[in-house]
Length: 433
Image (cartoon, rainbow, N blue to C red; front, side, top):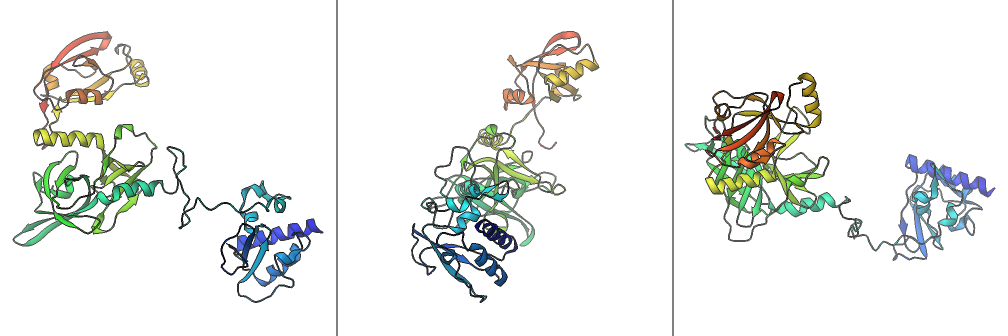
């Protein structure tokens, strides 16, 4: 009879939990709100009348000391909430929620025997119910990880509003986000937020207003802006301390790493998303460091956004300080990184393709460019640049830096393994192109 009642009780409770007919919570004492006790656990149950009868009948002969410890018999049939005490450390709630009491989707027969374990120690939980993650392993993600990363940068995220006026009339207004990266008031944002791209040449907008999260407003000065990268630097002056965010390293990111996009659009409080950001807002890693600046969202592709890596931005800012603009050397080459698979495919198409393990392929040379003047030909494979072995376009760009008018020695391999040494002199790229 006990076994039959056991299953009746489980079936009734399972049906109740799936249909919403059963609700319960744990309290100390006899349900009167007294302090929690390790020797007393109360269960608050709200059930429908038919289910009450089923639970009362099923509990008979199963629970220690009879069903009177859990459900009085006969049960009152009023529709109000009723509170029952379950003493001696027995936890009805723990039974139905503990994974250790279930096997292959069914409750185990000895679950009630193991339910006498004292309630879990709640000392590692905060007052709002959130678990304390101080013991979390390095690199793992928990419920507070993204919130902490956002909180580390949030105070430094600002709203930037700029207007273009003529004879007192506001012709255009642009709103975006930015991030204070230095307590002196240096702000990173998007160039399109502070520049007017409708004219033939981008010009600064008339006013730039910066609003912090604490409500302070400042008039900002656009120090520099780069149209191609869509990065700009704004400066504000404050007599009181300004919050600032730390810069991370985008080169350490891997595909699949978690990042958080923040913004401050329309003078609202910060927005925080896992990847979709507002123009000019920071892209942040889980350590709360800026790894990029959000520059564009593709409207035709939901959820697809772009950001400029912070490592590139650091170089842009250095160019601003050194040259007053971003200086980009121009060779006039279209290039492609080679890998063993591409090389094997090219050799299948042409047996005369040079025997190389890596390098940078030149599929096209721009007419009249420095590269054409140096003697580059389509099909060349660059293996050395300025005396250094190269395997990628990025390496060539890093070697050139901002050097314009400086000759570079280049070693290329051509069909049938012909090696040629060339000298190329980069020109500064035309910013209007």
